[in-house]
Image 1 (spheres, helix red, strand yellow):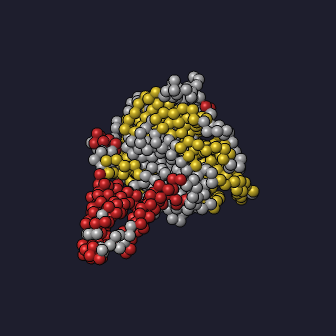
Image 2 (cartoon, rainbow, N blue to C red; image 1 turned 135 degrees about the vertical axis):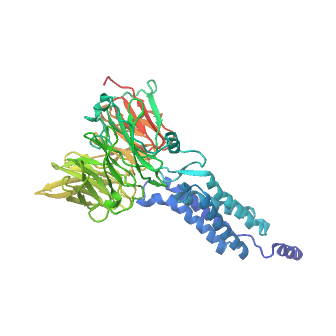
Image 3 (cartoon, rainbow, N blue to C red; image 1 turned 60 degrees about the vertical axis):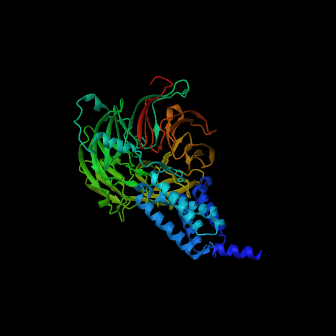
Length: 589
């Protein structure tokens, strides 16, 4: 027995079995951080950061454990630790640029660490330096997997990136290559009937004429199984989270085309390109991807456009020619925020109003529609991806601007802050407020804060507020709500929900549509939900229960863009495609 032990020690040269259970505990922590938040219905506003940062932190813990507490020899510890650090460094140089940042934290680092632990476990009994070589090999192979991928951004649950093979061309690359240049000017079409709709556009701005997300004037049938929506056209588009503006036969939207933010006018009947206008600029971030965020605004034959990189422009809606432009980065003295400038312009009394988020009084800014000159500016919170909203409360018109600090009520003419309502949120606000009756507002907010209804009263010019209710049972992220029949319909994180406008109590919760968008078809008493996974779903606008009556799949990729319904036409897009469907009607228009 003694001889056998001596032989073993001699063979091992001081090698001992590794202590690996802490490493596997950290592996479990990586998986919990990566996927566990998906089971949390409510939590702090910054909960979304855990899946992105947590796996990276626990991967570091694995390497530190190896270095200080693994029972490996000193040579093994140094070789394994610095070998993995060098391997990750080399991989980071070679990967596609989109695989740096969040993809490193969520995929490359965890795959490296887990591969290293598996290798150390498989080779543990060897009691030679080979086990460290095996651990380093499997860790490097885990990291090298990232070399084959390109990130298409995060899904709305923040639990996973959307990956594709690195060698696949994006739709944007195909578009740029097919046009051979990113910017050119089309000849103005001569057909006078083409522009007739500019006098009275049906859908002139983000979420409709009053930004309420309500479609009126048409009753749709729900018999999609026997009368399926008919696809009229489908085209490839550049990435953007913009929606459509509709004026008769014209569709307007924004796209990213290479190094140019591009505004396009399409024919509503065919999807054919009528004109496009490009300005140099590209905003791209690893969570949402590249491209503009805001929706254009159409007013009196002019198109007002806010690009993600900071350019605010006025274009001729007939030709796409530039009238004027302003750079919010210079005016507000700030870089583009984390997810880009996202404010859809609001037109009030010949002023175009947008959120800028600058220091001092450069939070919300207004420009003269004709000249582009700055007319007024007002302070605002630093973080907002919402848009200015015109509303009438207690008999007076205000521009309301939700931000991380709460929301402001501004005089549309002067920008005077009539009310700075204090309701701080540690994250950002990106949803539009909802006007209820003549004197109250609903302010939707995400995780950690929920949704609140307040009453606005005035007495001799002084504004007072009363908090009516606050609920954590409706926590939309960047998904606007709609109001109908005394109830709110929207997304509680990623599950569709109905709550009472009277007291904020939940009526029902059902339907996992991801971080989708909703449109109220008021005359049909239906809700059209555009799911994050590309489905189009019809729901009854009924507070009694969740009732899904029809659905079809419009896209096969991530979809965050708000849909538009005009008459019997559904105009819908995402970051890769745009499509037009003819929907069955319940009665003649």
